[in-house]
Length: 299
Image (cartoon, rainbow, N blue to C red):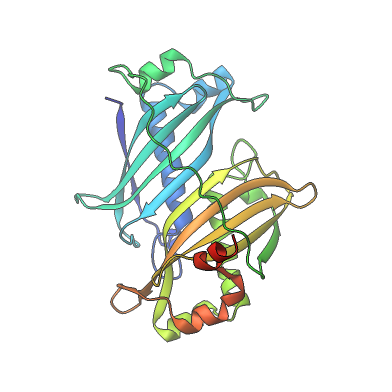
């Protein structure tokens, strides 16, 4: 059995969004901190990694949000290593409110083990594997969900540009993996405004679109003052969910930095229950939406 660790976080007011929920980016921050704590607990803290000249960087993250978390909640994040591959390791996370058994979220991150100086992958040493899995790892590798192939873009792809700011960086001097959640969230809000649906309008209509899942694949690091471009479009899966895809590139050389998919559900603000995607919303967003049946007809 792998070593498990539970990290506890009290949700701060500034960590919540305009709907009063824990902001999506902060789930990723909790995961990152829990992973650091779990590593330190088995003898691999930051000082030891620095001495070894190595570090872990996130390669891919998936989060499923099951129940809302609000200001003042105390959240326990249980985490453990699921497997090791030559230069990678998958870590799992379960989120619960303190004292409760119900999951409020679950997640996983694939981490890549790198040489700090070259940022090239390096083999995870056996003694490190033994520290994370004291009873011995049997070599099994958990199944992974490949990042879904984005559909061909619709007629109108929304694009947003911004520059990497100092506050976006972590100690590796890259854009922190959790900041990408903020990037795509901001892009999602801006595209809504672009098509005539600012937050105020949807609230007046009595509904909100909330994230049910996030899947992000990190390709290359973004650095201070890089200009980045986020392109986005939607696939309508059903009458109650839609997937928004994001492609993040560096315009000066076209390098893909990351790609992401967010599954959105629409909820009634009074009841919190899912509702059908409003028809007027679909109509206004039509040029930015790909319908799977339409794509199938053109194949």
